[in-house]
Length: 218
View 1 (tube, rainbow, N blue to C red):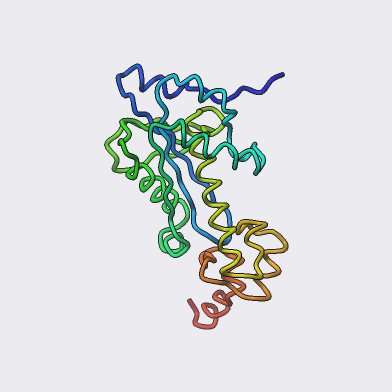
View 2: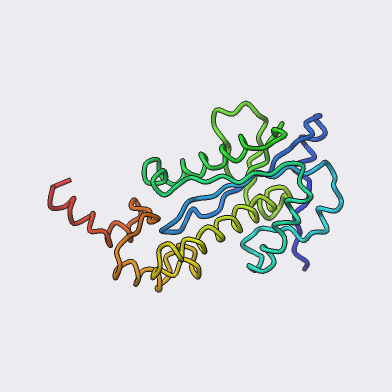
């Protein structure tokens, strides 16, 4: 049985209501031990037939080479697109759920022209006076959300590849900050760098934070 591809079904609900600029929103990088979480927002013209032919899908289903090839095509077709980040320090301060929402809000706020409605993977953005549709597995169902997932993922991957030169020894270019055996070994050997999320258990352990708090009775 053929797998369904993303389409504009959810965007059409807003288009029919007269809201032309519908932004798909998604994030990448909630799970890694290091690096920022990135979010992207993408607006396509209503019923842009060329978008369906690009091969957009949930970024996790695509190879790195396909994502890299699609990113400039998405930017070229988009009416507007933006990518924004929430830093490791902000993740530690707010928690990862809130950090994802902050990054998404920043991406939406950076759109020019501005969005009139949103379709979002899983979440809703609080305190934002725009119609929003939260879609489970939205990156696999909505072309706009799928495009946002690709831009967020490719931008974050490029950031982590550049970080590999700044913080050598961790293998960031290969694992992009995820908790692979290579990364965990390097973390134990080198300790955390400024990109590590100290609120995450493996990083806390490598930094000795749990032991310090236990000693202090915290």
